[in-house]
Amino acid sequence: MKHLLNDLSEEEKNRIREQHTGGKKFIIENFNKLINTKLGDAKPYLKEGKKPKKGDSCDPNTYLLPNGDSLVGESKVLAELSEKGDGAVIPMHMCKNKILVTCGCRKSGNKLDCFED
Image (cartoon, rainbow, N blue to C red; front, side, top):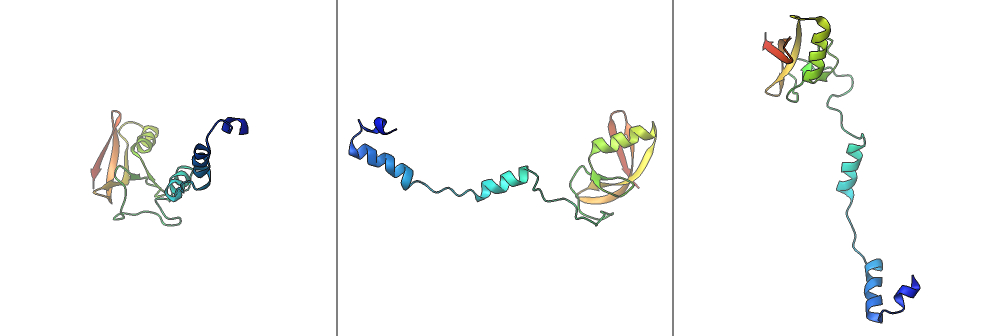
């Protein structure tokens, strides 16, 4: 590396040195938060030990299966209904206006048909 600097003037050498010694300081706190979250340091939606129930707040397009263990998406409810067979209705809770409400759901073609009790 020294032989590359031999043909440079002292002024140019000083500018290069300033870039490496003075330098800029980067704030990486927000970047670290993003990386840690993406690597699995996500905050859980539900607190451990607390089962959701009717009237709790929820994220849109989530459902509480009859066993009451967790909130799931539409695809899991469709899979559960497929196991039960055509025409089966599962009583459950679904998220409506960000609140869990009691409903019944059945499979209608490849879509989920839910109706409030």
